[in-house]
Amino acid sequence: MLKWFKRNSNGNGTAKSSVQFADLDGIPLAAGDTVECLRYDLGICKIHQTENGYEYESVSSGDRVSYLRMIDAATSFQKVRKLDA
Image (cartoon, rainbow, N blue to C red; front, side, top):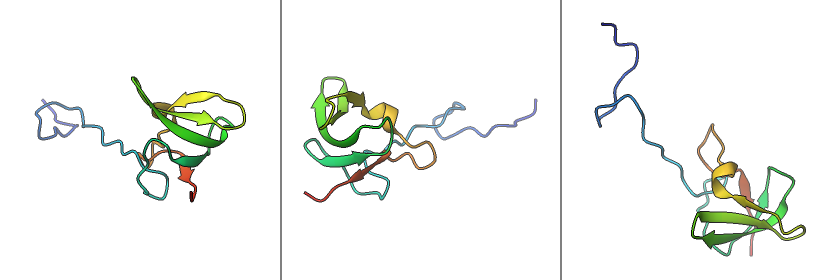
């Protein structure tokens, strides 16, 4: 049988996800940080930790978005920029 796909060290064909909770510049993020969201027209947001993980809450509109929806596929970083506090 042809082996078109390489197997990783855990024996199956799926790669482990390495999502990092950091902004586009690689700066680590934490609950309470203020960031500028680059998706969903959220603008300036605060990071909150909930039972489902982290969420971004827009300062202007109050909308909340899960951190999972903000992952940049190319870099696995968050699609946000940390603002100086």
